[in-house]
Image (cartoon, rainbow, N blue to C red):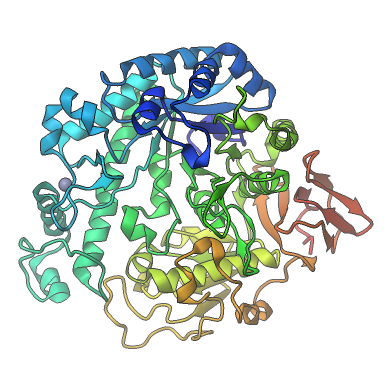
Length: 609
Ligand SMILES: [Zn+2]
């Protein structure tokens, strides 16, 4: 359940407005190949966007909230003029009924101004394994938040935004932790190890009892327990500062939103690169960007591309995710979505109870217009906004009750990312393509397994004894690959659990993982189908999710990933069909003809399939 009541039902979000004039002039940026931000037309548009008429237009287009610029890293004094504009824009937005979150660049600062204002920061730079400073691009150093002064900078930024600018929330960008090798971080690592390991336990795990000389490894290698502990420490260390920011926000403005973009599910070994286990975001964040270019659709290889991984994590852990719309073609050039792609992206988010968003919407599109105002986008966003505003009860308090689940865990994703992700990314395609509703189990223990009838454990190689015990409560558990071969400290078991599919038929080839947007459909994947519950009766790739609201009503959300309408034969008539006025669906006899998105309210307890 989201802690922000504002987000308890989907709200349409518009964003892209984080490039300040200052930043634009300094960098002469052409964001995603768009216009030159240093031009007079851009400046005119930028200033006008702060004014009430522009915000009223956005409100009229159906948007509930916008994300605007706030802190780009020049320092609170250094960008005071832009912050003043933020304050005015918030006031104007509130006057027309829009909520506002403010962009706060977390990973890096603009040293040219920041260091003048904050000379102490030169002693607080984050360092890579070679001792060089960590940077975003060539000119934006990263601060190490092990230093209290750095934490104070973030806390002050949050406080100023909520109090002075009147923001309804803060959206951190790049709130990942690339891992810092500075002496202070090393020291904290040793404290972490000392607290976690007795001398006996250290000797059992590492071969020696005194861990106070253990260095951060430079990279992941085999079953290295030092790498595993480093990654676990870093995830916890990042979590600590996020918790501090969350607490500060809650103290200043209860209900205010904390958003973030730690670049979740962008690459195969992501959890150990950004040092985030996605489920942890629920403790601190309300809103998370799926910044991964995985806009939904069928890719050139016939694979099903989607942002489901982050949505399923969000639905299971209890935060909200919103889509990334950074489309790119095979030549890796960015492009904007067409109407159908825009609808599909919003639909996929809604099917998982997440936040529909035009991530690129608030950008200059020439002739004084913002990108979201293009007719092909308004044709989609307006009816989708009307739809979610008319039927908030479809999502309010909704819980994913799919009887099929996929188990994932932190340790395996760190030490065996290729094995985990090739199986997970293949399995997601199988379940989505065949319309089998599912959920994620992202935490250990018996509670998360309640109601699960079929549990898939896709090559999750590290499992605790307790978790294996918990699996016994599930009627059907399907192990693939070498699931459970190791315990959580990467010691091999004498007798591993028996695998149902040792050859992991669900996995996509390891060689395809470098480009998650272009994954093929797993060649052998359909061998799993006889063991899974029946999915939708359709020839096309139609994904399904199953949610239940507090009064007991169950909703089956259907998303057609293909560009032609799908015909789905329904085993039982639904009680009601809900769909947006654009790209929706309609009943024809016992068939549902689905353009992109529809929600079926099911009859009590009987299956629709
Ligand atoms: Zn450090």
